[in-house]
Length: 354
Image (tube, rainbow, N blue to C red):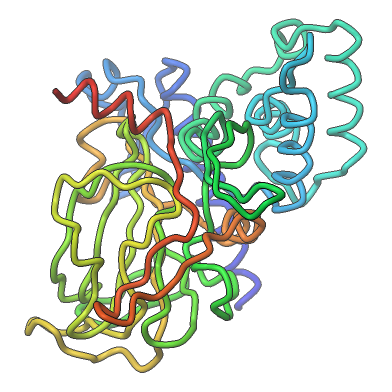
């Protein structure tokens, strides 16, 4: 029976992805009502061609390989874009990266470096544009140019311009945690539902850092997430959710709604708050960070039944290679990053807001 259930839900997931692709391509898929009758999508939905669903299962190995090819060719005549490489393989695999082979990525890179154009290679790939937009939504702010403080040979701090991974692990460097792929696991508090995030179990007070530069959209108490903070990417496509933060001292004290944060900044501290309508209550059994990533292609997807949350497990594994080093101020009991960071996207957003 369990195998049959897994197969059934797997088929449903594949159907959801296919429907999203068809809508994105401007086609007219049929939707099945609760009674089983097929009806055409509404005229209003037909007019909106944004993506309705994303299943992100790109492996850490594929992310790492694509990232290496991107950074190694930066500044060269042929600069390989890691998102395009992943989108090509996504279209080839039908989104199923269990089929991933390192040799497939290598062969694609070789063709491009020899002069082939991605437009030529993908002209017969019906769903390439879908995967490209979907993967750009997930990964769009994680690689690019930035400046960061480093120590020179004499131990003095200087600003260095770089190109590469400018996204950080949600957990600060040097703080242990354990995790597994728990996306979709059942939850029962309040009502029966699926777990739409990634839990990282660790020690109370562990500094939680911003994965990507953005601005604080929400912070405060939620009965499910306890003390939580939500950070939006500057392009509005990604909403990062950090929940179950520490009792009494959940957030970096300088933050408020609207604050701009740089990737790698400390924004809060691990705890076990939540599962209570009363504020500041520890009703979670285990200290952990609930880290979630929501994709937004249209404002109607921000809240309610149309929300898109993606599995972050493989992404978190990939981001582990870039952890923010932090230091504690004993007078304030606050943690802050050791090496400051400048993201051009933050400066651009700040200038546009003036």
